[in-house]
Amino acid sequence: MSALYTYTSPKLHDKEIQTLQNLISALDWVTYAYPLVRVGEDPDGKTYPLCYTNDGSDVSVKVLPDSDINCFCFFELEGDVTRFLESVGKYTYPLSVTFWLQLDKVYPTKTYDYTSELIVEVINLLIDADCEDITYTTEDVFGGFSEIEEKNIQVFMRNYSAFKITFSKEGTQCN
Image (cartoon, rainbow, N blue to C red; front, side):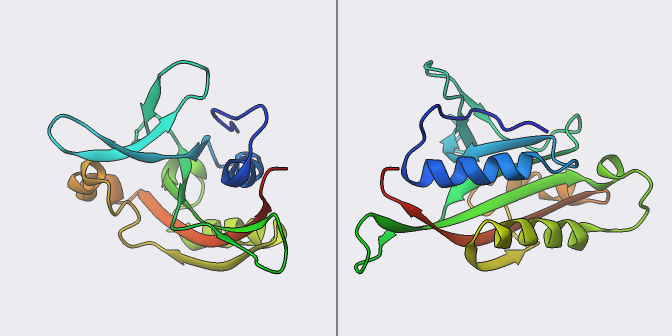
């Protein structure tokens, strides 16, 4: 429904992420599609996904499970970017997209755990967008974000669900 915090002229991995962000935000069950997040840290040392608002300010927002949101997702860069030696200006971006959702709010008429149906929908979208090396997990999807891990029992009880899809996406250097 909403691709948040987009760039006017994205480059490198931001360009690939924004393209995917726009495709995912068109899914009728996604409330918010955030771009790349980084690890934020509060004074107590708890970490969380942090997304820059990309509005020229110094404002960033915490991306956390919220009972007022049906579904959100965000992207992470999952390692080093590699360049194709045989093709100048072509890169492979190791990415992931993490989803958190409330099953009873996304499709209220479904009374079973249909997480796998949503995973298939996203994987098919990524395949159509020429992504490769696609894997997914429903375990430890917020690994590295201690503020969410601390609330693990609360944010993953039925009717909540979460999954993370990791993949690679080829892109150009600057175009």
